[in-house]
Picture: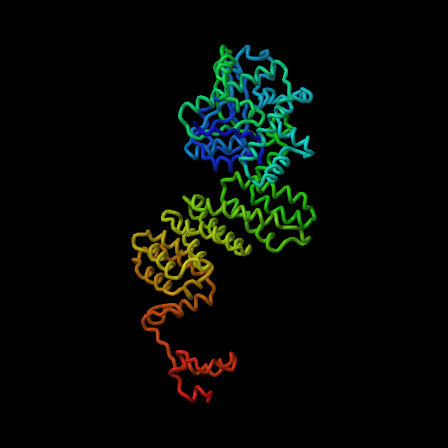
Length: 583
């Protein structure tokens, strides 16, 4: 028997989408069934196209009467959008399972043809498709409950909106997202018991839920092992009866002889304004563009709000950051958010506000950034690599500021993954190795091995130069104190032919120009010594003069105190008695 899970969501609910993503990660379904128009199944893979930037909408329409249509909008924070992209990326079968609009838009289905209620329950109203504002008054209570049952529960519990109620529910259940969806199902069962629909709405709901149950049974028969069903919370109790005795026969009778017409489907651009309640969209949210702000933009607001003693508003921003970060695939956006958040978590605000929630955000962002770092740094051009290198440095500084070993270990694991990449831009790979070297997560010997590999004859000279730039830029201390690193660079430069050397000279000079003059002078002096080693290297030609070193010991004793009488150091074993007596 397949494992079938029902996930009741709030349409366009960021908190709902965050919980859904966690639940899908845990379940790893091989089949995803989503409440939506099956007429548009062929368009689902296009959601991963590079140019497909939400908000967007699926449009289903009758070619013979284009005004008879319905829109299904999606934002980045829409649970259905999250489910679609999750399933495609995981290689799962992804399908829409609502009653087809070939039925819902057909003449004679459910209600008179001219009624705007011919639009699907959770789709954009037909009045919206023609830019005509809806003139209907407030929906009857049962209809309002059906369209936003979580909002109705939130109001009953004293919360101003469904999002705040959802967050409170998630937090109260200690983040056990599977338990949250089970609780939603229980709440919907109780809520449906007291809701009565008019005849037209009852027929539509019965047909839609019958088709969704049939789609679940069909997927189960096809041999899928883990089936995730993503639907509006209202439908969960009805869909849970998919395997009830006699239900298949009843559903077949409901769906028999439904009218049908020809429809077409397409993706269409959408807007935040049309996702808002104020537009008349019945499944809208209060401030959709707020939820779709970049995490980096939101992170810059928190300190300002706390300084202005607006802790309540700061809490709202933190909630928005958590929602957006959980759904965002933009790793660079998350990286830009970390430095200001880490600084605020470390030093606080001028109002001495509680920054524990900010620290919690940082602890959540670092693992996400580390996990996505390698993928984000692929296929970068020179300008993008330079920007990415700056973000690597900034995040490393932010993690160091927090001073949590576990967090640093997670970040260093991400850097190691990047340092191991052979085809990523050399500038980011070289910087990843340098950051690990500076944190002593990589020894000088390993850093030297990585440098030799990157500068070997098998590597293209421009790529090798980019690696050197990433490793050395802004600081030459690695060459000064890293034993054996300077000779590697020297050997590489000396091994270049004249044309290649001339080609790379501007880049090499630019790299060394970023190193402080004092450091450049020390590097130059080291190269003039026999063996060309850096200070501290034990290269051939380096001589230790014990007699000269012994002359400073009396002063050191005065400063540091006498050593135990019975203890001889390597120096004192060969020092003349006159020096031992301090004369």
